[in-house]
Amino acid sequence: MRSEKDSARGIGNNPSLPYLLGLCCLGLILFAIALTVVIALIPTYLPDKGDGISKVNATSMESWLHAQAATTTSGKRAAADSLDTYVGCQFGASGREQVRQVLRQCLVSPLAKDVTVTSVNIAYTAGSKKKRSALGRDARASDVLSYVIGMIFSYDSDCLYGCQTKIGNNIQSCLYNLPPGNFAFNDVPLLRDGVLVYTASRLRTLRIAFVSAILSSLSPFRPGSGPATRATTPSTATAATTAMSG
Image 1 (cartoon, helix red, strand yellow):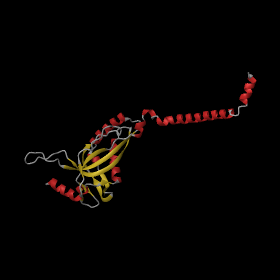
Image 2 (spheres, rainbow, N blue to C red):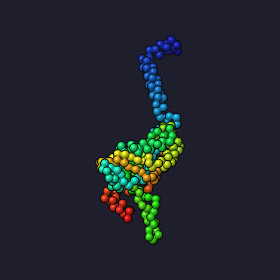
Image 3 (cartoon, rainbow, N blue to C red):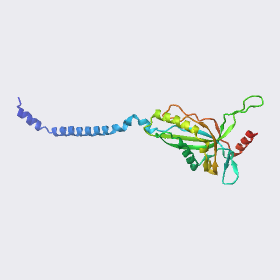
Image 4 (cartoon, rainbow, N blue to C red):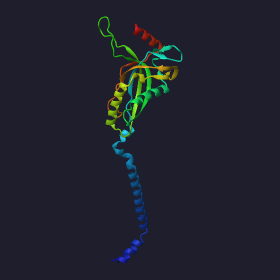
């Protein structure tokens, strides 16, 4: 039988032993590095305060406001022009900023941070009042000249779905109750297909006709766009105005 001294001498003379020990050490080092990387990435994939989704989507869906417009506008000329001529036009950037400042009056909570005006179009919208025909039947609802305003509200990142829904309801109520006189705009560039066609020195509003529900972008529902809108060319707009007044 081999003595313990001979066994120890055999192990010590094993030429592969240093390589095996080196591989084990290298494996342990690589494992430690991989474990460190995994631990470092954990916070990236965990939602902060349980609110990871809302921090990305702390906005409302696009909502709509219809404001009935006064039918005349003051331009660079002394005489007032008919706004019907500019149906189908959009407010330029400076006009949208004026609208934004009015809408900001309804940021009713510190958690409601801002509002973006996506568009302001001059269009006809279906009116709620119906005319009676000579036979007693209801005629088609009259068209109303309107500013059709698209808007998106943004919230604090800590405002979750329920918070956004509650604030949206309060904003909608506030917008309905804003005095029409607040929606008076000066030196508004009116664009058609991106080209400036007119600068209105003053535009006025008669009433707030419609405000859609202001829903969270996380909502499974969609806000209604309100009464049907119709944009026409200047020539057809004049004809429509004549037909309505006749």
